[in-house]
Image 1 (cartoon, rainbow, N blue to C red):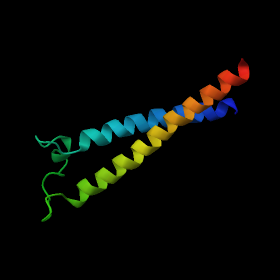
Image 2: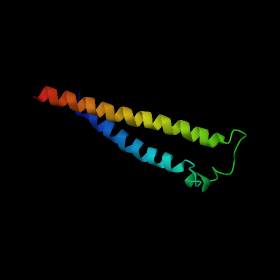
Image 3: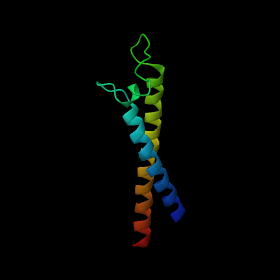
Image 4: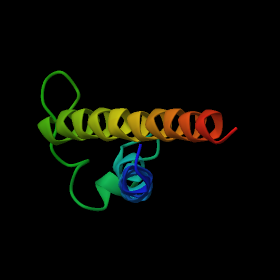
Amino acid sequence: MPIWFAYTLIVLLVITSVLLTMLILLHRGKGGGLSSMFGGGVSSSLAGSSVAEKNLDRYTVLVSIVWFACIVGLGLWLRLQLTSGA
């Protein structure tokens, strides 16, 4: 595989790592978290979870899947490079 594939995965991994950190910090914990600072803790439905919190959960799962795929892709690329070079 070409080297640009690895560079693309590394850039995507850095972006998703920062985004995943931000999304996790926005989640509402036992103490309210950063999401209450931005108004996420104010609105709640009958189920106890707001629509914003549910969307935040979905975005977090989506970004974490992309993050995990980048790590697996980099591992596979490295393995291919090591086996073809030896």
